[in-house]
Length: 196
Image (cartoon, rainbow, N blue to C red; front, side, top):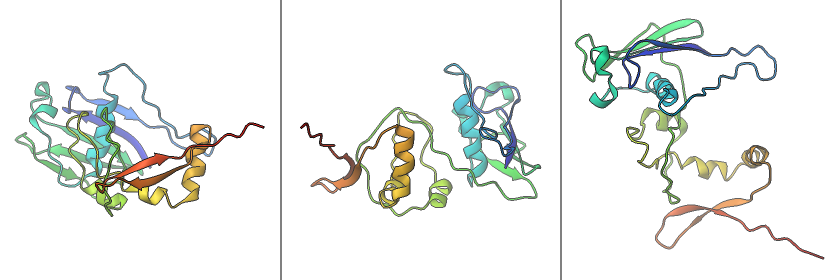
């Protein structure tokens, strides 16, 4: 369980910022942390920090490091009441080191995108493969293509649709289809209404 995350030097965080997460207490709604704020307020930056903590072989590009923080990044996390830190090497620059006596937490992160590609390929990556091989998340205008394999698994499990329809508020039957060029896409089935 993640208790706290702090960040300094990544994107807009020139000074250290801390986020304490809600802890589940067995009551409905406990343990839920919601990030709310204006555009450019740092919500995505904090979420990206979680993904950086979980990934292997992390580098921070020049454009992601805050110059006011001496070109250095430090992301600290407390989980299960133990501490871990992902920091740039002492000299600064892109390369990082994980400082902790415990292994990195397993965090699953799907970056936000403003571009949608309805077509996808069939890959057999599992969740861990996706996490350990993140796509280029530098720009929200780039597409995410390697996460869509999960749709093939979801399509086979009726429990997914039960949850999906509950969130959606109505049933929306769907399947995966393939066009003549070999690309896959999600096809929403027409619901027929009969008027008597």
